[in-house]
Length: 439
Image 1: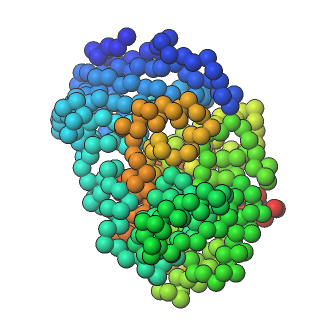
Image 2 (image 1 turned 90 degrees about the vertical axis):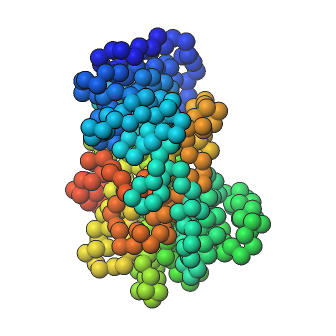
Image 3 (image 1 turned 60 degrees about the vertical axis):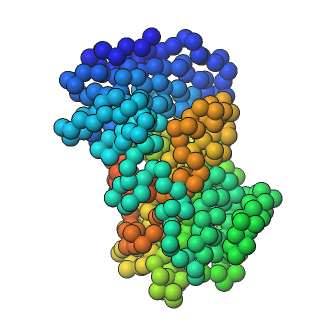
């Protein structure tokens, strides 16, 4: 079944595991076993810009989301890599079966990653030393904010009632930040608030209802927030939905684009004046943080399908998710550009939180969600680690003045070429204004 001496990458489909059940119009793919080259010759496989020409004797992949092929190429897969030996910039390093290993150029060992077009692997390495910021994939939200005093700051966190949104809320409150939890479900958020207050009686928390899939709800939230007279230093656009079957928002937009991007775009625009006035009066830098994903690399080929946003016939759950996450990065980049031109002391950045099985993003795919929680959790981040990059970008002094950047594992990272396309960012901005102005 598995070979480790082939001069080229070998992909073998297994008939052992091929569930016939379908969900959301998508069918699970076969389990795939990939044997990578074990020789130091050949072109190898790019991992974060480096070439792996020897090392990965065995890669076990299972489907990240059961999708049909993307533009003739294989759908993204997620898997675990066991590395023996990696060539990194001419230097060799060994990992003992992933134990105590370090990542490529900084780390090696077991890896959870996506593989898509051109067999490019991207994601996080579990065992790794710290990056330039002093933090790594293993750092937690508490660790990256240790010693930081957020007293006097006010933040909005969307999606604060579950997953990394809850952890982000908890840690920001722990550091003295007044957090407004923007949530769809008041009952759930009420329990979260109680739990945080039980741990930290001094936490300053408010709960406000917000449905990002409804522009009317977004406008109502923004109006009530501005009426409250609260300042706004930090806007953390965290909430999101991942790879559901084709559905529309209340405003008749594809659910992921409408919720993940348009809802946050409108919310941000409606609160910009509040953020600007807060920055001027407090003399403190405002920060907008868009929680994106490495999934942005798997957007549709053109990036954003402006003329096919609601095209169900060519809809792909994962590509649509990638499109919305790409939009999060482009949105932050365009904001950063505009802030710089206006001379406003507000920054805008985007980030990849990491793969986290304990969030509810995969709630539309119960089989994959179950697999992630049973198996992949041992190679993925937990919520304290998943919220780390968000809290780092929101609070850390190292990020002061940094804008229009993309972060991962609490360090600067490189997004896709499309994510850096300024013309695409401007076009998306204009398109988003048109959609939100008409509602």
